[in-house]
Length: 310
Image (cartoon, rainbow, N blue to C red; front, side):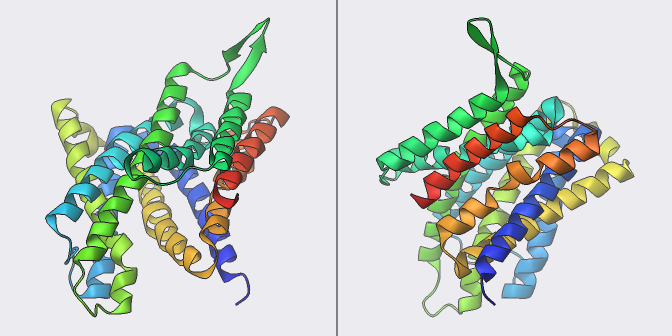
């Protein structure tokens, strides 16, 4: 099929747009912490079934202690910190702006890889970061006399930055963990088992996320909120849809997309979520779409595209 990879990447962007919209609703109904814990449980159930069918074992069979360490650390940074910030940003100002801040993840991953893995950073990468940051600033700042002020609550902006940074750093940590996992595989491992490695890594990350969110809720004496959330049928429906379209369908198709087209093209197309979410979010919440928001989002996306393609 012509352009199969590009088509899959666009489906991923649509899937992640749906995830953001469902997570927005679920966050408001259930709260960020209960939603994240419930999402980790649902993710583990789905991943356990997938690994059981695909490998014959319901858990990551070949991961060493080193792989577990890095992937678990990635889960703490990416899920416990990053997704906690992301879902709280949804509560403050909605998924439309929350997804805009997620464009900070690729530049953050680039800087983290440069600092800790010795990966090269070309001048075009720094330029792409500058364009991305300018696009975000253009979207969230307004001129007030001779200075600028935030048009969004500072609390939400800080959560948004934390979400993008957490996802970017978590991505690099997961790369280290997956490299360790690959090195642990026995010789002559069947090809289909190799394709399931990212899902095994996601299993470990989700398990670390589950432990992390459980500890936080326990320390805050808020575990009762999870029981309350479980009784919210509409909220649980949104939580299930969030989990299905995000960690399960989104991750699966994103891995397939990079197999059938260049990673840079796939990554750029999958980063379209901040653009795709503008219209459905406006329709759902009956908001006016401003030219400034659209232009700022397009500038930001241009920076992301430059980062992957130049």
